[in-house]
Length: 270
Image (cartoon, rainbow, N blue to C red):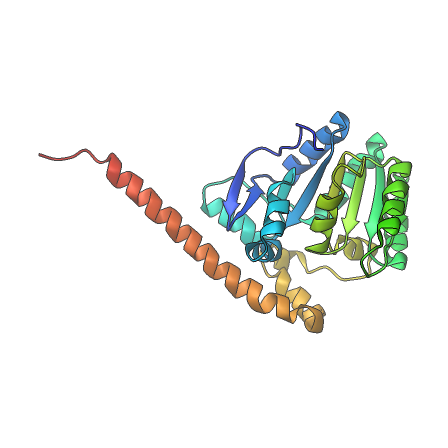
């Protein structure tokens, strides 16, 4: 069951996925309000990869569209939102995690880290606690890289709920983390679950982030492909050209609709 608070304001249809028209400040403010209201929601941090995966997977698309918030994670998504006339800024998983960690340390919000390799999660915890001595980390869990048995899954839910976190950070990669959050909605008692993909690795220092200029230029995918070519080449071989072509089509459709409306508004001559 989700609370009625589960809304991040205006959304825009980006190739079938309803993306929240927000920036980092907006997202942090909404999520802090959700913590205070004590409802239950999940957040999808979604770039071109998640949107393209959702196009071919109706269930994944539904999971995104039922989320309390779908943040524009990559610059191509942000640019498309802006070209469609929507106000938006990049809400990148690692940046959102940094911002909410800082806020949590000030207000005593409890964190739980679920996912990733055990040594990475422990390094993540250590790094964030050093940076924010008042941060309350309620617990961590690194699940095996296989499907859990029902008994194991029940034990995970029990452990997370026993820790009483305010935020459950889920680092299982797309689309596994989105399916996990949707499947545990109503079972996990924390106000917020946030799927942040590789943010655990980046903040723990296990993987290098793209330079700022590449992130701002929409070229982070190229840095990640260079860093992990064997793992990522298939993903980016279809995501980059596919998203670009579909985005151009979406903009053309919007232009034709606007032109049609303008023609209809013209006074008829005699």
